[in-house]
Image (cartoon, rainbow, N blue to C red; front, side):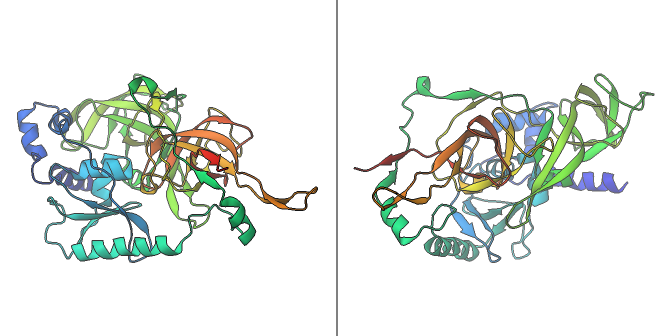
Length: 405
């Protein structure tokens, strides 16, 4: 009964989906669009531009994030999708600010603070303070590589310049890559795990469930619709930042996925469509997001440097066509398709013949593309590598380095 109460609360929140002036309320969309409200919402939003990333900011606790200024047509659903990587989690991360009368209602001109797992309205004064704090951080923090250069190294690096890659002129010059199937594992945000439901029962007499079996899940009327798909998983292993120890999310071994067939009362009837392993009653469910089979490569030079923080399948080394998890995401300037490279920083070495000290260039060890991007995390697909990759390897946005002469 407690679970049902929570579901009802979430359903009420979702039904009161906040939107900026100019976008119809979902309840009115549902009335005019038959039995598929999600499709109706998509139709209503089809003509609207997705929100763009706002400027970087730092809150009173020193956490990095961004400030979004609401424009006509913005919804918490879309804002969550752009900044946090998924639209499903906004009710669980929306922090009600007691200083604002109705935090669930947004309007053009409102300022929203968005950090890792946090999304809340702020006053104009608070927004300006956060933006000012970000400028102060930028003024005192060097945008240097992970090593600290000496005075000699600074002089030697002065002759080098990073230049952007040539712009893509038309659709025919777009570069795309096909990525390997990733249905058996996933990187999930903490908020998504917290909102997970489960398989509560099955009419099957078998202990282990598989493809084609009917099951009952813990979501009912107002929470799901026929056709909704859910990923099935059992264990969730925490993924933490290597330096701060902060929880970034969870790695889950995906057991399969199911589709909702019928909804009535407090539970829905679903069918298991795919199973990678045996499925049990009690296994947990989260909304299914199918990985893109083809990704268009994008050059995002402002993406911040970070590290590989996790490798699936309990492995300590990875190679080409594998996946790795990174501690950088949309808040750091990355997006799906961003080209990323693993590199070993150059070092100052002495020329034995002349006695001069020479700075060796950075060595690019691997090329990757981001196939899934959250607020401060991402999943990268390894395109090619010169060596086995390890947890702790340094990554950055792909660079095109030339030397001035």
